Length: 344
Image (tube, rainbow, N blue to C red; front, side, top):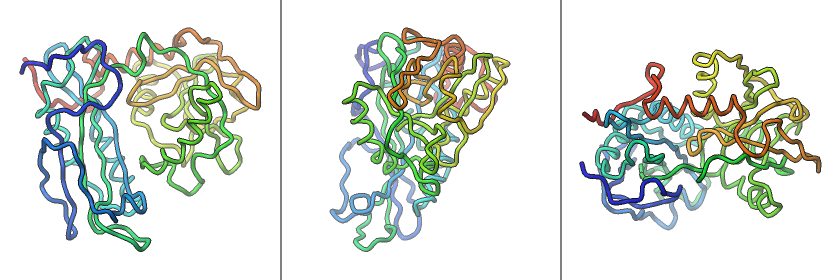
């Protein structure tokens, strides 16, 4: 299929409406079969549950063109399972995992001309989301829901390479100990926006959120998990029940242990340990790893030895290996690559 006439190498990471999106509705206790639509507008009741009580969950993943002409999605089953878990936690009917993956396939196949070519540095970003569409005024779950998948071609999150970020330990809390910090719901991101704006106004790129119970352990930022590298090369990620289980972070830990042969551990990480690490990074679908160069805590600037100019060496190996797996330049662990279009 002939590609769209876009400057693929200079795309930003931003919304761009394309040909088709998937829509399925839940009513009378069941999901319908769903359909592809060319209408980008959402029409819902003025008293719908999403507008009144913020019942909404979402996911993010990417489809890639590979050297052999195939188009693939990275680990979509994990996104489907995480969305189902998120939905159940806020009293929404989970969208079936198998149907979720089938719907992703349908959206990518219907928009093949929008999938950026191999080597462009761009990809097709998929955003599945589900929200309460039925009217509700008393405080209770809705009876009706809508599941959608939209897609858009996006460029790399960082233009000109990933420059190390400057973070600040936030005075705000992101998630309560028995709250919703472990699910991917819009309400969690809304809670982080005031802290995000505050950090930007003070000249920082992002926040470091601590556990709200003791404010001594590092959790995550408003939209990404942490990875740290010790001075002897061990890869460490924080352990907490209020951290979102990032698919990128979990994949990177497997890459570190099984492909690069590094020692890895998932454990509580005290904020006082920051000065002891050699490298740090933020993990997420958009950028894979965003390197961290400096973290400010109680007015003290803590510079990572990897510096403010480029990724640290181990962070770079992790980034290159995972992106190589996604693009097809490195053999993927079994089950990580879901083929949508076989190519040649």
